[in-house]
Amino acid sequence: MSFTTTLLLALSILFVSTLVRSALGFGDALVAMPLLALAVGVKTATPVVAFAASTIALLILLKNWRDVDVRATWRLVVSSLVGIPFGLLLLKSAPEAYVKAALGALLILYGLYNLAAPRLPFVESERLAYVFGFAAGVLGGAYNTNGPPVVVYGALRRWPPENFRATLQGCFVLTGLSILVGHGLAGLWTPLVLQLYLASLPAILLAVFLGARLNRRIPRESFTRVVYAFLVVVGVLFLI
Image 1 (cartoon, one colour):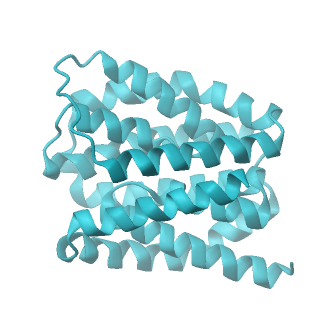
Image 2 (cartoon, one colour):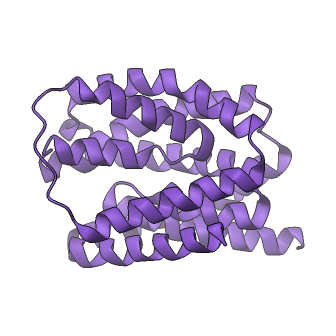
């Protein structure tokens, strides 16, 4: 595959995944990681998606920072920082075939879980934030998929809709920067990674703008069910 083809493919994937993230508040890595990993490999896709995700979170947070639940954010962030090194170790040491299989299984389980739309119990204690935050750190360091544990925790805590999207970005900005630093220390900031990220910035900015408009206009339930069904299909392809 030529560099031009790889670049156009990466731009398309990051545009779509950013659109999902801007509209829903999460889900960009779950869309971008499997597709980019197929095109450029996991060890290139992971830092590219991390750069894009941190940029998206910062842009959304700058506009919605007043809605962030600070108490929930700091617990999730602290425990995520503990989990990130374990995720980086997994990324560096695990064979890529097993990493893709694990990511595929994660996508299938998460997609089916959300399509089933279970009625989650309300959790009053905030101590579970440390458990979900640690899991988010491990998944974030390895696969950039730190969103699912935080989203499930927010559902368990019954975060109000106006706080849900903003609080997620508060977590993702801080943990995303830590993941990026970890990737750099692990030697994952290659010239190809930086080229793909910088070239994708215009597409990311456009998708953030369009996603914010979608967030206000498209029925949330219909949109998310399509996304989750797509994730299940991609996960099956990964396992195959």
